[in-house]
Image (cartoon, helix red, strand yellow):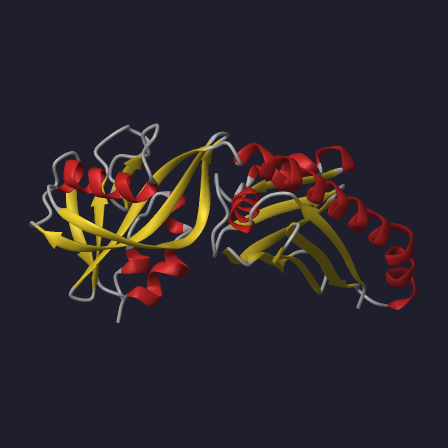
Length: 271
C-alpha cells in the first residue's frame, strides 16, 4: 500500500494553521496547475463535507472525517481506487507549527497497478503534498492579521443556545451561535460580553476558547468561546428566533457553514 509523507514548519500558531486548513478553497487552488481538479466542500471544511476530485478522466469523492485543531482528514468514498486517504496532522513546536501531510492509497492490483504507482501515483502525490504545504503556509501568514468575529456557546440546564438569522438573504433562516465582530482595542472576552448584551439582552461570563478558528473571508475569522448566563433571559433582539438545543437536536439544525465546523467541539458540552 503506497504511502507518502511530507512535513513543513509554519511560523504561525497552531490554531491559525488549523484555520488555514479549513479553507475549502485552499487545496483546489494549490493543485490547479498539476492537472488535478478539486471542488465542493462549501466555504469551509467540516466533518461530513464532500470533495469531488478528478485526474484526467478519473473522478472520485472524498468525505471529510476530521476537521479541528488537530488537523484535517479525508477518505475516498467513491472512485477508481480501492482506498485513498489524505491526512494532515498539526503539532505545536517551539519554532511554530509542524504540518505533517500524508497520502495513502491502494492500487487496483497486478503489474499494471504497481507500474502506475511508480510512474504516476507517487510523483503526482508528492507534487500535491508540496503544493498544499506551500499554500497552507501562505494562508497561515495571511490569517495572522485577520479580524475576529466571536461566537458564544451558551449552555444552560444542559442545552445550547442558538439563534436564527433573519438577514442577509443568503443566510436568512439558518442558525448560528450568538456573537459578532471584535471592535478595535477590544478583547475577545469583552466582545463576547458586549455582543450577548446587544443581541440577547443578557449578561454572560466568557470561558475557554472552543474548537478551531474558522475562516469566514480572506481576512476574517470566527473564534468561539464557552459562556455561562450571569443574568437575564435571552431574547431575539436582532434575530428571527432563538432555540435551546439538546444533544440530540444539535446535528438536526441548519447551521451556517462556519458554525457547523464547531459541532464536534459543541457535542461534549451537552449531556
